[in-house]
Image (cartoon, rainbow, N blue to C red):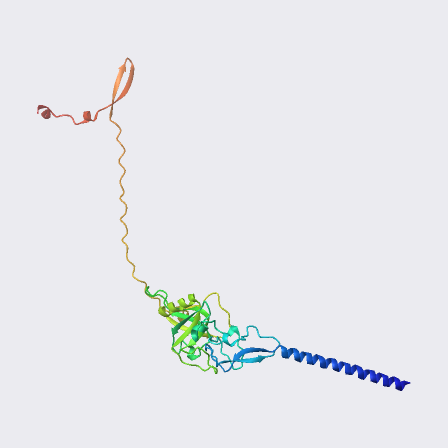
Length: 305
C-alpha cells in the first residue's frame, strides 16, 4: 500500500515538473519572437569624427537596434543626418541623436557649434595669459582685467577685477576640439563663447588694459555675486608713497563789504524863550527861531557896504 502511494506521488511530481518546463519554454519563445519583432534600424557613425565635422554619406551607416525601444531623438533616416555638423566628438558605431547634430543649414566648423543667442569672440593671448597652454577647447575660464579706471587723472591707482566668470573656451588658435591626452599647446588667440553683452565687455577690456585668463574646474559652476577686485595698495601695504596732490588754484577772496555810516540824527529846531509878565504872574513861552536869524551879527562895515 505504501509503495503504491509513493509511486503515484512520484508520477504526479514528474507531470507537474514537465508542465512547468513546457510553460517556461513557451514564455521564452514568446519573448524571443517579441524581441525579434521590435528590432529597429538606426543611423550610426561609420568612423570617429571630431567636433564640428560635417557628415557625409561615407560617415554614416544603418545598424540594427534590438534594445526593445529606440533612444529618444535617434535618427532613423540617413538623409536627415547627411550634410549636418556634429556638436560633440563622436565615435564609430555610436547612434546619432538629434541633440548631437547642428540645425539644418548651420554649416560646419566653428560657426555650427555656436548655440543660438551666443557669440564667439577672440582675444590675443600669450603663454602667461593662456595659463601656459592649458587653456584649450571646452575648458572653462574666468576673465580678469588689469588697468587704470581713471587714466586721465594724475596719480590714480591701478586695479585688477574679475569681469567674467565660468566662460567656455570655444577654440584655442584654430583648433576647436580638445586634445585627447590633454597636452598643453601654445596659442596666440583664444576664442570665448559669450553672450552678446559679455562679448562687448571682452572687446572693450582688450583696449582698456591687460586681460588675464584664470583656468577653473569645468564642474565648478559657482559664480560670486560680487566680482573680485584687488587694488594696487593691497599688494604693497601702507608704505606706498601717495602721489603729490595736484596744485590747486588760489582763489582771491572777495573784497570786504563797504560799511556805510548811518546818517546823524536830525538836530532839534532852535528855539528862544520869551518871559511874559501879567501882573504878578510870570510865564515863559518857547518860540522857534529861524536859522537865518541865528547867523552872526552884521558888522557896521558890512552895513555901510
